[in-house]
Image 1: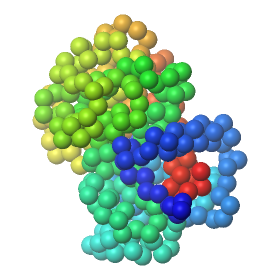
Image 2 (image 1 turned 45 degrees about the vertical axis):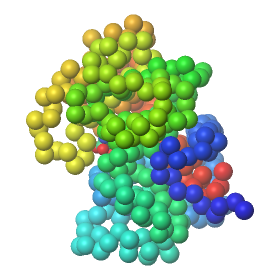
Image 3 (image 1 turned 120 degrees about the vertical axis):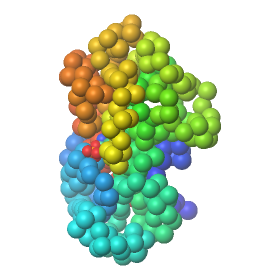
Length: 301
Ligand code: CP
Ligand code: NVA
């Protein structure tokens, strides 16, 4: 029997068939934007324990374009901010809404929620992962390359939640994924071991790592929740994506960044505003990818 709904938690847990289904639906939605609608009204609740612009607005607009609606729960102005547990909140929300996006720190909490929820849960970012972002990123690469299989993708900077979700994606795609970080900022060894992809390589020297790269990706050096450690910025200086680094690839290389960007830190204006920057398509594609994820979770594709 077909499952009534599906959670969208992490990319390595998805079937490749589902991954491709969501991606092809994302492209279809983009081509026919505003035409796809729910047969009956659906309501999305979004729980934000951390700030958001893109995730929040693209899910909200996406739901409204599908003829659904949205309720936003900011930590501070709900009972969550006064200590009501997420678990109790979820038990109640499951009775009111059809689907939930959760953005918070603790990945375990996301999984605990998914176990007790009777409606689908979407991972809107945790300290460990950001799968929705990578769906839009992969969609963006598919728009610019005939195939992803032979690509050389290079992550430079902090081995953070976004990098982790790229690592998760390596179970589905054959691209080479090189990761260059300062010592102490590489993704966790257990994750690399668990994913076990022979296409992933680690480099301490970003200038070595980017050779031949078709795509360079970075993200902030200071993720949400890490703001109290100004010392950490010093070790990242060599990892800035600037023209000098881009030239080391010896080819025309695209640039991705999930945003928000810290211009002059992890990326220079020349690169983010340059001809090979895909960041604005990447941000736009969140809208279509999220609509496809919503439909997939509710078993509507
Ligand atoms: N890239 C991303 O998730 O952006 P927001 O934090 O603005 O949602
Ligand atoms: N790594 C960043 C991503 C923001 C979308 C953070 O967690 O703050």
